[in-house]
Picture (tube, rainbow, N blue to C red):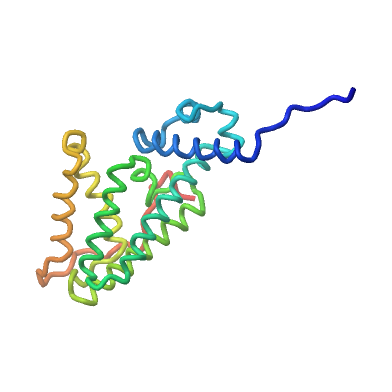
Length: 212
């Protein structure tokens, strides 16, 4: 009698396990940030740690897969708004969608603009999102809706700033960010006749310990 080797997981099982992992990781990263361990993610998904590493070579790769989906979704929202009749309302809706994403997902807020992964696809997705933000902002600038020295990079940095401002209130008042979004919108649409005292950044920066 010839020996046989145990069959590995079927393709359908592999697809199912990958989906379970992504869903579990998205939940745990969103609630607790990027420091959550692979073991905790595996437990949440109901699989072993070995299953995680069969699909993703590292926690960074797993986080990248989740971030790519979220970044692409937000960029798609912005792209769809580029055809809106009202550029000011389009920019407002994009900013609201962005802040809401930051508020609901702690890991997204920690990663976007500061990709600790040094993952090129994440960097490319962030660049695409910034390009969409710039197009939306430029449409609003052309219509005189926002001040002429506001850029898409300014807008992206404001999204994170709004989340950080509202963060101490969100546990008891999850919609508090809307107040600070309106304050930010007032700031970029105010017609003061004054220019901002410092030039805009050219891109979203990496923190020093995350530089390539």
